[in-house]
Length: 116
Image (cartoon, rainbow, N blue to C red; front, side, top):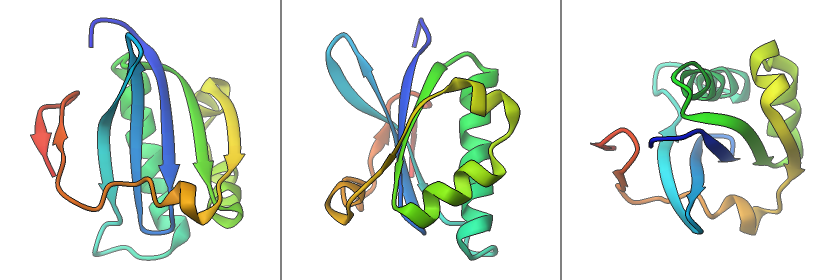
């Protein structure tokens, strides 16, 4: 990416996707699965905070929208670091159908050029 963008984090309790829009086209930035060695909503929220922090530090995003169920959204709010709190444009409680928008199959990560 040559410019900063708004990221949309869609998160469930064990997987998530970070999306962005560029020139009217949405694309997947990164798929995130819960680390197999650390389980639980709080550990996964910290993992997601690391992903968001990486995007902020590398100037790949300048705004964040979070969509998650009530419990995960509360956990993300609780552990959000100040830098990420300042970047949050919206926090949306998502219905299970919305959370199901997280891809389940391996996807080419166009932003970082890796396959998960």
